[in-house]
Amino acid sequence: MFIVIVNDLSNLPFDASDIVVLLSNLLDNAIEACQRYDKGDKTIHVMAVAQQDFFISVRNTSEPVTIINRSIPTTKPEPQLHGFGLANIRLILEKYSGEYTMFYENGWFQFTADIPLTPIS
Image 1: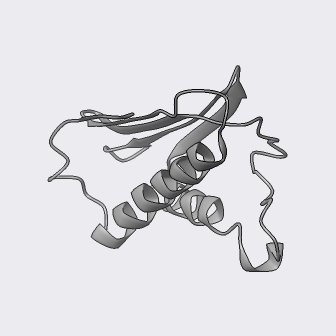
Image 2: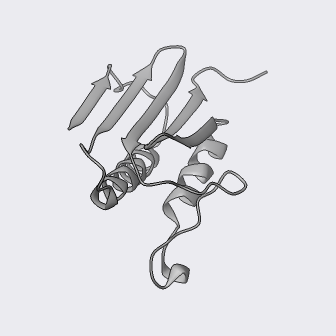
């Protein structure tokens, strides 16, 4: 199941390539986690809302995830060739003064980010 809640994002003050990298990496990670999940229904929830801030949340069914220092080590073969998606997401969030959190609980992984749309004083 794939559930998406999005409002009008057309006026976001970000480079289009940054939004593509952010969304594509989050969705790719969620899809890969669901492909490996074998304990029941596979579900991805995406919420992206722009109001005073740009808020994005991706929540998906997942096998247990180990989070170390706000990062997730890759479990793919040849790790030196993988694991750049989350690093790219963090770089974009830093570029726009965004904050993020992620956690795993009871078969669900969630990544949530908040980027201010007004300059921080």
